[in-house]
Amino acid sequence: MLGNLKPQAPDKILALMGEFKADPRQGKIDLGVGVYKDATGHTPIMRAVLEAEKRMLATETTKTYAGLSGEPDFQKAMGEMILADGYKPETTAALATVGGTGAIRQALELARMANPDLRVFVSDPTWPNHISIMNFMGLPVVTYRYFDNDTRAVNFEAMVEDISTAKKGDVVLLHGCCHNPTGANLNIEQWAEVASILEKTGATPLIDLAYQGFGDGLEEDAAGTRLIASRIPEVLIAASCSKNFGIYRERTGCLLALCTDKATKDLAQGAMAFLNRQTYSFPPFHGAKIVATVLNDADLRADWMAELEEVRGGMLRLRTTLANELRDLSGSDRFGFIAEHRGMFSRLGASPEQVALMKQEFGIYMVGDSRLNIAGLNDETVPILARAIIEAGV
Ligand code: LMR
Image 1 (spheres, protein in one colour):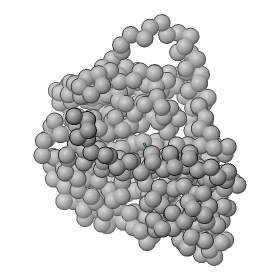
Image 2 (tube, protein in one colour; image 1 turned 90 degrees about the vertical axis):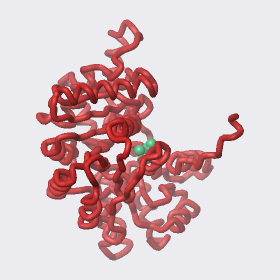
Image 3 (tube, helix red, strand yellow; image 1 turned 60 degrees about the vertical axis):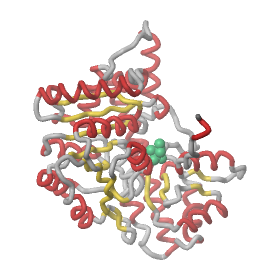
Image 4 (cartoon, helix red, strand yellow; image 1 turned 30 degrees about the vertical axis):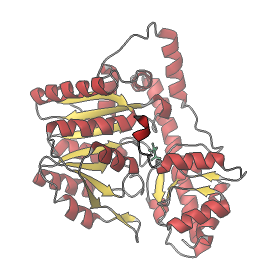
């Protein structure tokens, strides 16, 4: 039977991770997978996370099953972190999931249970695994124009035109902040316009919030999501704790379903718990407990926020340094967008051949669409990358 299986195309981002590992060159530079790294190339455990784990080890007395939808302290902490005063637990269904990807998958499953004929609108480009999951589920995907390859900014006019064709019962997937893979984001006026289109069309937004705290700040990065939540009756939010808590391998995420009334919330909560049960039964506990411990303790929370700001500030500084270096080398401002983009990623706008050349000649690994992970750089490698970009003719 298993011999009937068809070979699967490898995930491009994960394949690149393997290729980088296998490269014997000393000076190789990994700008591939979206994982934060410090200046030494290490992905540290955040201070508050370590302290929370110590406390958990000292106080936990059992490993028996916990909540099927996750623990209430985690759900509440996430709801408040994402929505602040806009979090209304009485009308919000919440689900702990296996990472942010698990939240995306359960959100799509939930939407399909509610409307078997739904279409999903996704930005062009988007995180490749979004499309892959939708294709695997057999969901019709409609792309909306998003990124202007010339300016490397959002082509908002085109986005507006395309998402205006969505209908009630469709889902429009939006990146809450730090757009992956481009780094180009909506400003708050544009979020307001997107809200008006969603009001008009009746389509349901699904907001992928995987990088809260990595762009303009913890509160600022949730501003678009909060605006949508304040205006649109039903909103799905898939949040990841992988990046902002640095707990990638703990697989910690959360799905929020904002409803108009308590009866609908109860329906959604029941369906979401059912989805967890059918997929993997109970969600992982450890990472969610770390997050709840950090967010619910004033000192740990303050320390976590301070460290998150250090991480964010470091990435912003690298962006400016790289943009300046490229301005000096190219004698033009055409790479200024790198300093304007936010989050871990920027799409450089290099051709696949140029990306391949940078890998071969300089040992610089970025995703084939020329997405680079800013956090993979440090002060020594910024000039090397800048020179490679110019020599590759980008
Ligand atoms: C990325 O886009 O690199 C990250 O979200 C990691 C992943 O799972 O692809």
